[in-house]
Image (tube, rainbow, N blue to C red; front, side):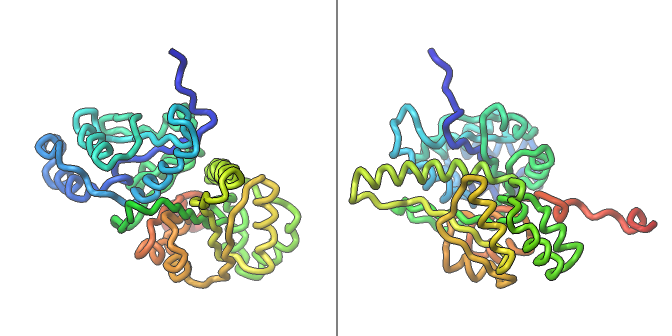
Length: 319
């Protein structure tokens, strides 16, 4: 039997903490310890877990597999979990109960499995465990920490809207560092001077490229079937504005990736915009922005770049 090939698919790793609402289970673990946690999960084995922060995104993404043969899906979701196989049974049964087409999983008792991301060709790992995500990003892997609580999702709706910040997410944080050092005027001058120089790609550029591949498949379907309605939509929501917008647009083009819409907000509260835009997931590198968006929108912190490095103690900073 030939090996199952992952090379030409969008592969995402999802921790059970991002897919399901594990607040009650986590409380048992924190307050009563591992043995009680294991007993709790065994006692509730057949109690289906409620959807978590990333559930709407994952569910809707999986519906796009109807664009391909069942044996050759466009999207592959793999559970990456700190649970052991026994306590992971409830997760897999909940996946089945929610009718999610997820059949592959890695369970590693008390350890993060993010190290397997390259071997599994993953473009993204989502988890509610901030430490795991930071460790993955520090190793150059594309990962995000889901924020907020569960969100309402219409099971009959199959549209999927994905929104990205630019600096520190699709691009590196090089220009953000210029802003931190030289303020808004220094930043704008730098971006105008380098308008023709594309940014280096950031942690989620390849994820966007894989999303674009599915969008092209949708376009093929629409050309064959005039009645087909496009479901996957991508937007850029960034604090950049003119004249710094030009370099961002040019960089996307040079990388060979696209977005459907772009919001160049120049400091306007992103939370108010995404509340209207209603993406099913929004990626940003700054927790200050996500404090606003996560109140209404499934939000993901990408802890990439200098702004996300831990602050040094005062006595170390002093000369």
